[in-house]
Length: 137
Image 1 (cartoon, rainbow, N blue to C red):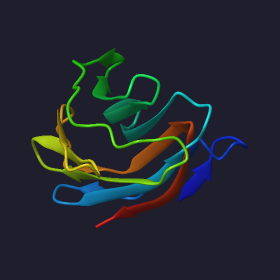
Image 2 (image 1 turned 30 degrees about the vertical axis):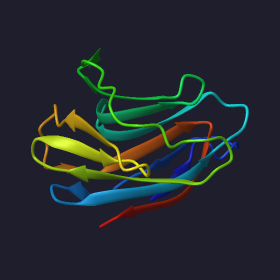
Image 3 (image 1 turned 90 degrees about the horizontal axis):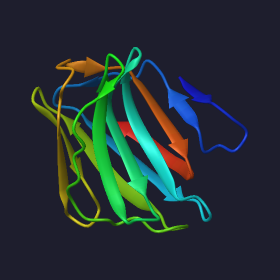
Image 4 (image 1 turned 135 degrees about the horizontal axis):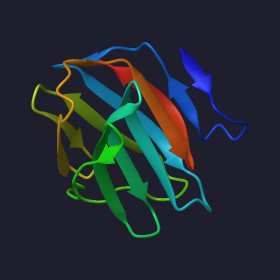
């Protein structure tokens, strides 16, 4: 189920779409002009198993997780293939050990699967981004 969180179409939530170990999530979208960042989250109740903050103002991708209200150590790896008003595509593959992010410039980000679940059901997108497609294989 896809749910719009506000009128801007920048914030939305996807519920009850299982991402299981071995599955890959593919996301395409367009960063909006005038917005400095957007985020993609894979949720587990009130925890965030996977948080990816794309910071257009600094040209960085920051990944993290939130468990019991406490953020883990930030992971800053990979390149930066994001530009305002230009289509992007990246994948997130779930393994038992990590979330493997493959960016369109060929670079990778490895975020440990700190919550340790083998399945996540809910996703959110926030900030200055228009999501074009969301697909789990």
